[in-house]
Length: 124
Image (cartoon, rainbow, N blue to C red; front, side, top):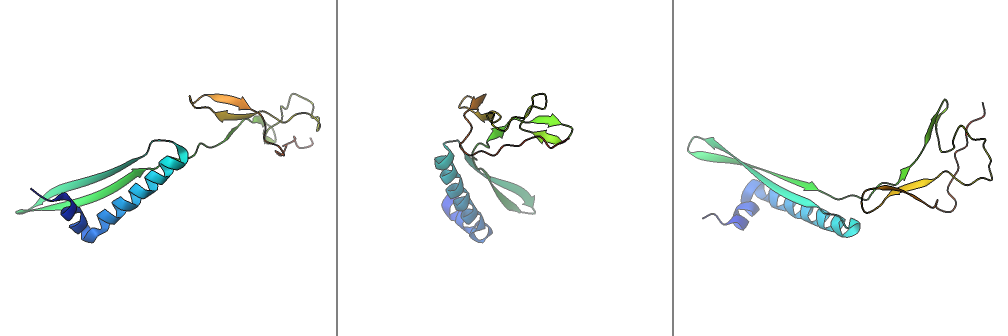
């Protein structure tokens, strides 16, 4: 039986072993950082060549990422705006709502962070 560790360290002059180790480190750190599932896959391909086999290898990683913050916008004649174009603009009014995805994957409104910039409609 082939010794897997010897094979993987020898295959492609050790490139696959190094790539696999780097992928494992990257995915493990991202799992800790983002509290999400990750995955590392080693795929070996075998092709016959005369009496030999040619073996290829590929390492793929599914690295978890942080959720991107969502924001709601109105579509206006002047492009996107955080302000409702059907409402009169009042600079002292509260900011447009802010949204985020909760743990169940649902969009929920959250309080705007302090100092968030406003995006008033351009003058007509």
